[in-house]
Image (cartoon, rainbow, N blue to C red; front, side, top):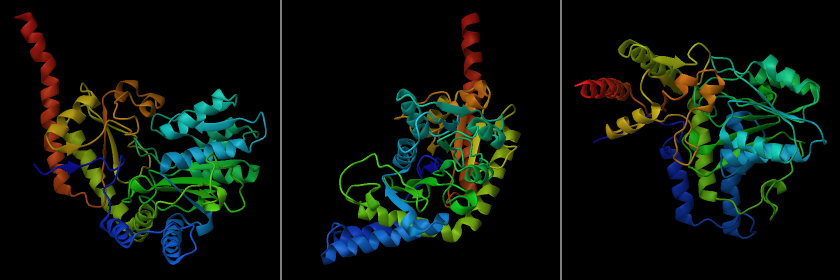
Length: 388
């Protein structure tokens, strides 16, 4: 059967323009970009062109872009690189709803003896700027706050926090992996010193991303080797993947407004229909501003895991939260932090992209109605058999 893919927040399908850019590099045979000969210079030209495209997407300068293997590496480089340069005894501040690649890095800092202060979100999934600044208390070495939550899609008050942190001279990192390509980003307007993106979240290939590092900021690398990326991220560059990243960034930058409007219309249609067709269903975070392509749906009486499996059998791909736990499904730490413990086991995430069609959402809604009806009927049938 034709499959319907509604899990773009886990990984968005490769854009044709990105595939074409990668194919050109692979066909011509990329040289090592550190070499002085013609094939090496050709590879360097591809990399620097892609770097410019990535910089334009987020309002940065090309020399402020460090190319990495993806969002996880970018987040780790930012957190560990900034922490290594921090004066002893100064804490780090983050939120309870960050991506696992930030939360894991914070846990490692704690194991090394550094204090980590975590800020809880509201029930709507927004981390209050005032609470972040209160946790900073004038002495933090680093603050790390995501721009858009990967599970619920809620946008965080990064610009408000960034303005105050800049005034206080405190380093600020933002994980923008789930926001890049979906909402406009301007690193100057956000007031961030470090910002992470991942190519496969906006139509680029998997395994490539970037970290914005504000000009003049010293960042300690956590890899050692050659002098690539101005000594900030050594290692021979993946030229084909970087070409795909640049092409995807260029396309996202050119279409972001129109794409956002279209996807937000589809999202609102989806959420209205879920509320109408499934009594007791809840849209997590609906009352606040979100990225336009993401819906977190709590379906009363049915586990998210069972819905993911049942819908997969119907030919529809969704998720029960983040896809970064090696294929496991567990309660959502994001929803639990929001105070939605019951919903954390009963929620699914539906996320779509520029190519998602309204007809696909109608098919999804019809399938969702069927599988929810079966799941809700199953306990009653079991009870009836036991009583017979």
